[in-house]
Amino acid sequence: MGSGGREAELTVKIYVDQWLMINGVINMLLLLLLKRFIGLPAKNRRIFLGALTGCAVSGLTLFGAAGLYRLFAARGQWGNEFFPYGAAALILRGTGMLWGGGLMIRAVWGRMNIPTFFRAMWGMFLIAVLFGGLLYGISSFLPRGISSTGSLLCAAGGSFFLSRAAIRLVTENREKKQRLYPAVLIYQGRECRIMALWDTGNQLTDMLGKRPVHILDSQTAKEVVTTVRQVRYIPYQTIGQPEGVLPATFFDAIRIESEKGQILLNRPLVAFSPQPVSPKGEYQLLLHGSAFERNQ
Image (tube, rainbow, N blue to C red; front, side, top):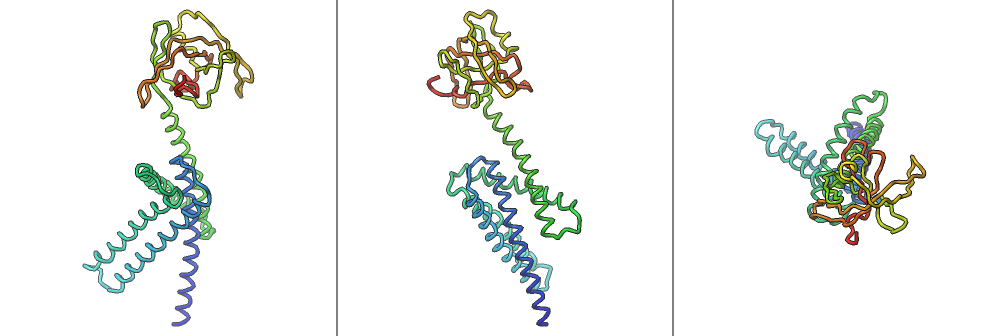
């Protein structure tokens, strides 16, 4: 009897050690993915603290739920006794997971406003679903010769990189859509409606007047520009073409329809690109990085 008790105690100890390591690693990976998804900076030591917080909350709820299940099983009745004990254990576990996610977010980012907090909680839920599905799928393909802990850690690493790639794709598309604006080009009284991308990396400037330069697709330019009164040539450099010159002229205005209302750029200097500014045709104009400054 004593020997059996010692073996059971040893088995539980090994399980707890493995559970803490796996749970801690997965919590850190989830927080790193959440950091990318919501776009909020976080130091690595705060992420480590958040992972430990998640382990603590998860451990308390797990062993609390296990205690209720044990109490339920000890009663030896599977009829009416299920609801008070089994349901209570499930509620405790689910509530612990919810509170655990909130406390992990609080440990990493501290106090935040309510909309940002709920956005982070929603992001944590989506990431947990994605990560968990990938973890289950990858684990099922791993060879049986690897230990259970090793298999889970390998699967967690693969799930992290796949999840990060998916999140990067989603966030890049979301950021691009957030920088796309309907706009109207006005030149010599003619108007042309287009889509414009606010490109913060576009710092092209006229060397003579130090004016910001917006870049228009030449095919679109043909629709609105019939005659050019004044031409300037703007030197530029890119990775694919170290040196080049773009013809440019002054438009009457560019009217941008943003979420804050209309923004009018008077007498903007617009250069004509011989190549499409958007390979997929999503937009026709690259706005200068300073396009939304008041002194434009």
